[in-house]
Amino acid sequence: MRKGFTLVELSIVLVIIGLLIGGILVAQSMINTARIEGVIRTIGQYDAAVANFRTKFNALPADNTLLHGCITVSSCNDGLVDEHYEAGYFWSDLSQGVGLMNSQGTAYVPFDPFSTNDPTKMPGLNIDQPSPASGNFLIPYSDTPSGPMNWRFESGAVATGGGAMLPKDNLALDIKMDDGIANTGNVQGINGTCNSGSNYNLTSTAYSCIGYINVGVTNGIANSGGAN
Image (cartoon, rainbow, N blue to C red; front, side, top):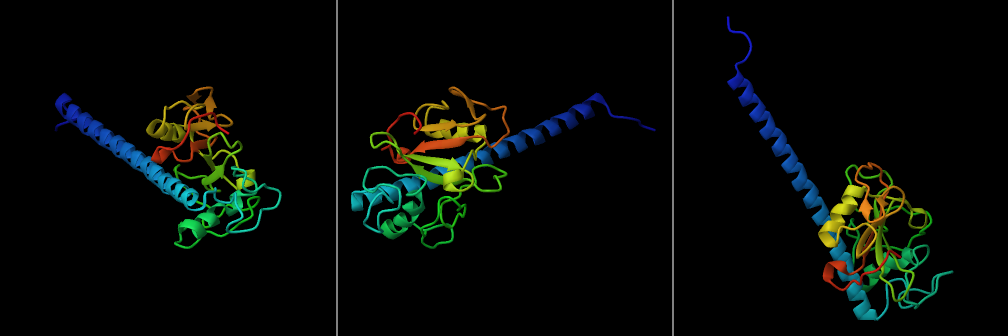
């Protein structure tokens, strides 16, 4: 009776296993790449909407009195988008002004930025798998008229959000869109254990990064600078 395997048979089995593992890794890499590129395309749509709004109204979404009254506490027409107040009108302005729709195909409506984490009222992007339970939201923000306006990836409500991205995914966006350096350029990732200076903390499995992407980088009109 024959017992065991010959070295040739074992070698063939190991080669097959290696090919299977290699194929799985390649497929996973392709899925991750497609996911990152999908997020970049989506950001590009929002960049275009903001650019169209500014061309049409000569103002930033939410930072105006064209489509609504001046928002409480926040200043209007100062060239800034305050994430704690004006952000609640930002997406509805894009809907009214240039026809941007939410994931349900309906217009965005104003919301309370201190309590809302609803993707029908502000975009939720599933850049990470699994995505954090509270979502990964794209939040507009600028604090100096001469500095870059950012998209911020945060979890939770606009005014109380925190890190929402894995460092490895923030790095993937940074490499695709910018210089791959965590704390400089048009794409950055900071907060908590996200980075150590210029390097992303790739050993971290925590959703620790607040990602920063300068508005307009996808259509070549963003300006570089530190995170606001």
